[in-house]
Image (cartoon, rainbow, N blue to C red):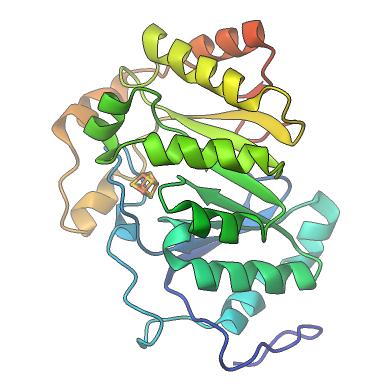
Length: 271
Ligand code: SF4
């Protein structure tokens, strides 16, 4: 594939990856106008996931469906002028970026070499060595937190949050620029008890961490429901009932105010 003018071609040995979408002109996945590269594969099963098509495991870098680094770079480089005027860049999301760590790191390094601001969005459910390897190659980490209570976390995401919280703590210790993102799901993590636990936890973990930028709230929306049918999956019955409920963002903003934590309901810190 031919690269856009100005991009240096990577070596033929560069890792390939499985990506299920590249979305241009995103305004809610980090600062400025961004392109979002959605990685295939996730070990979690959040009941409200709006990208269930990402769940199937990456099919392996040697398969025909794998995409090269240069193909991704060529696609995202088309919007370089927008990144420059808006302070934007490229965000790797998913699925779970950490499941394709060699490809993610190589892509981040090559985008950084071109002067493009890079971010990753991760749920942090991966071994620390993997999380560190990817997170230290980007400019900003968008770290998703779902629930503080581990029993509830297992119920609604299918996995424990112990490793997720430990990885968050370690990233904060490394002083990497980091924002926490919370999908606010009515009746699941916006109860007074869970909000207090979540915000108390964030307050403790982020105290005296100057690179922590704040919390972004992402109110639940059922936009991804049709994808379940398309993927041959069943949208959980109890989630159907959430469609008409309003997420209680106010509980998070009040708690954040009392704890002195920067919080955003617009999807972007500082907007
Ligand atoms: S971690 Fe993200 S991609 Fe994975 S199931 Fe949860 S919401 Fe979906």
